[in-house]
Length: 523
Image (cartoon, rainbow, N blue to C red; front, top):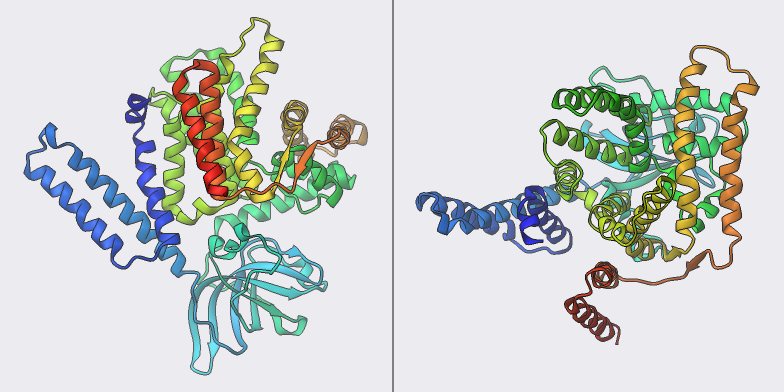
């Protein structure tokens, strides 16, 4: 295991990065990062002064770890500083840009905005802060979209967590980078023309294109419930999913299929690679297929609105493709760590995002635990082997996400295996069909009988999920788990599998020590 760890440079690099981010987020130690930076620089200088002798190679390792710890710690402090703002105590006029399509609430429309300027008695001053703006619900605010610019008169203030809010969600705004929140009545805001000095960002263009495709999709699938599933599978848009269906997906453990992520990107990636399999696996063909498929994957990411989950999955697949072109081992923890490294370099606060944690936990455990589970059984029968592979992958992914699911959502879907065996093949078919129908709808007007197979499969999806919810004890709720318990659950799952497969007494001792630690912790 240690030799495997040494062969994965990004897995080694990601550890001091995570340590720097976590330390900076939770602990305020003056001059910590400056001291660590000087220590790391000193270790590097010492190593080179000693003419890079092999006996002193540990100095370079100390230097790299200290510098990464200091750099990511300071990067996190910089991100946290953007959530702090001495906003004026009274109402002023602000020029803002809507970053995402507004979300309807009970009596308002919630808009995630970027504040560009404030008009005070001294004149217009530039501001660069993200905030949450609640607009009174009316026909005008309901028609706003991402990329619109507003002139708003409001008073911003720090939004305190709700008394009923769980502790793990208390810092949601800080993690997302929002400095404050405000409310504006219908007569206190107006839509303004696009300022010449501001260039539309690529995500606004992507969301605009996705909105156009959603309108086409609504014509293909007019039924509201079927449309909500179709838009969730293809675009990750859950805004039209009704509460009953949302609850059913949550109980059965199938909510992940409505968030475009690694599952959807992987299915599409495999479908696009399939035709190239007939041309062999020479280095030239591998390079050619990646150069064709990877841009297609980024086009798919664009039409889904460049949401964080699909960007994360597409980035990971891009590293996978580059590794294949370079002739390296493709899908490994090193690729996953490289993806995490560059995403945290872009925004260190991603580390505390629930989607980021669930995604990387699932992929990491699939890579590390799934091979161990597959050793438990082997058959030459293709159908049985496919079912067994689906079971092991689903189990490995659930092991990776179970502690986080319990920690954040206080529940565990007992029927996750049955749900995944039903919905994942169906999602693969639906995703392919939806893309084909959208392309065809640009060419011809699709008659109703042509869209019947798609609508029938969507209804099968809904009926199947609702049927699974009727299984007794489909979901265990009201579970409580703290951070210590989550980590212990990860270790216990991994060591239990190792004990079952390798039958070494060491893992039994480790499990006993872990159980003793938990007993002492909860006393």
